[in-house]
Amino acid sequence: MGIKVGISACLLGQEVRYNGSHKRSRYLQDILSKYFDYAPICPEIGIGMGVPRKPIRLITTSGNNVEGIEAALSDDNSVRFTDQLKEYAQKQAHQLSDASGYIFMQKSPSCGYSRVKLYHENGNPLEVAQGIYAAELDRLLPLMPKEEAGRLSDAMIRENFITRVMAYHDWQYNVAYNLSPQALLDFHVRYKYLLMAHHIKTYQSLGQLLSNLKAKPLGEIAHEYIKAFMDALKHIANRKKNSNVLQHLQGYLKKHLEKDEKQEMQNLIHQYRTGLIPIVVPLTLLNHHIHKHTDDENYLRKQKYLNPHPYELGLRNAI
Ligand code: SF4
Image 1 (tube, rainbow, N blue to C red):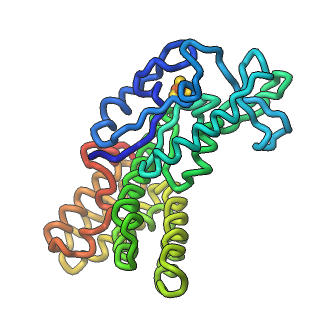
Image 2 (image 1 turned 180 degrees about the horizontal axis):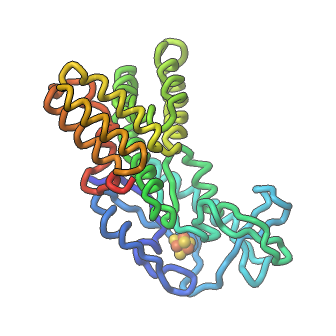
């Protein structure tokens, strides 16, 4: 079974947009579908709006207060869909409690996750907001990684999102559904260097949190842990932070590597840090040395940092 991921149905080619068209994404449909088990959802169809239908937009009835944002027909402010879209999100949140991510269609007043146009009731454009359905789903499932399809064309954002989905899936199936102190500690060990590459302060504070598992009920610690963990992963692991982690990992091998091998590794880390080569180059060599000099049970081999997502996706060739 693949990894369950919610997705705006129009991104998979379903002709559900207001004008009967779709917004098929070849990357999402042809490539990521090999790893993700999609749950396609169109909230506007879900609340009974047909195809074709009149377009809707976001309007605000109380300045910039989020509470006052409503979805209404573009040509008639008095016809609102806010409550139906929120209720539909509440229904879907139950169905999606085992999903590990969600990909939204951008700009939609229902599905847009970050940059949807918001209008004053008099029709003047004001700023941007979240779509009604997306905002409600975010409120109900705050840990689940979410991203807009349009932003996934950026290699860094794409790699970051897929890393988060894979890590959250690991958490759901190997920790949350069978919570134990050992499962929690093993997870932290696996993600030590990935966490360090994304947000070193969180890595340190979570180590502290797990240092006394008797301080609070385990469920409370786990909740605190995964919330901070998922927030930390939203920070992009840039060249500086990744180079630091590569140096740390190489440090474990220093007894095993010849002088020229160490120099070669150093050169590649430097070239990566200065933007000459992608991270896959120093990582491939590092992986090679780790597999040559350690056994299956070695601490380094357990590091998700070395392989956070399917290699075939080539996500690290582009960053
Ligand atoms: S963006 Fe959302 S509401 Fe609009 S057609 Fe796509 S799935 Fe339906």
